[in-house]
Length: 165
Image 1 (tube, rainbow, N blue to C red):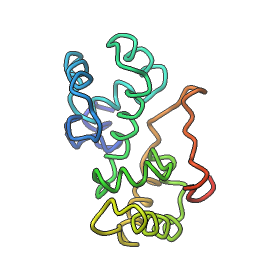
Image 2: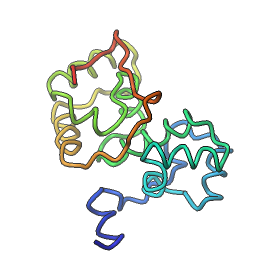
Image 3: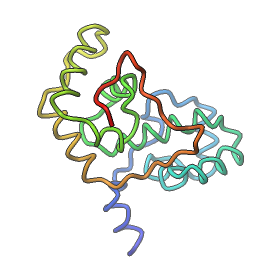
Image 4: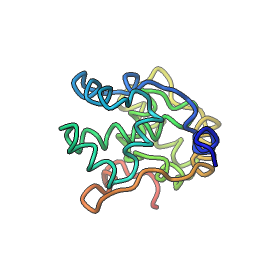
């Protein structure tokens, strides 16, 4: 399969710049740019797998936890409609990647997001039930790209746990 077809199949055809992700320190962006990694698709191709991420972190001097956070955000950027604010809400609820999003039940996640936004007031509005259902449906269709080393396994905060995996 050609690279272009592989990118489309993995939903990596959208050239979202890494600089559009939340929390990208300028120094990290420059180190990635020096490796010709400027888009989310390029970052996922270079660092979605734990082994690749460790090599990239060592080669660039980027903190491993910072790089993992960026990879997770790039992964979530594959879902249409999850922007900066909704992405932050999901991340704070422990839904940090496509795999975890795919495990959610739409009604439960919508209710959790709605209650969380009422309490924290991060967004002007909460996502609609239809938006949340669409995100989950998309996540269930997409292949899992992000792998974790044992010490990187995400943990959902107990107080904010959405639905059990």
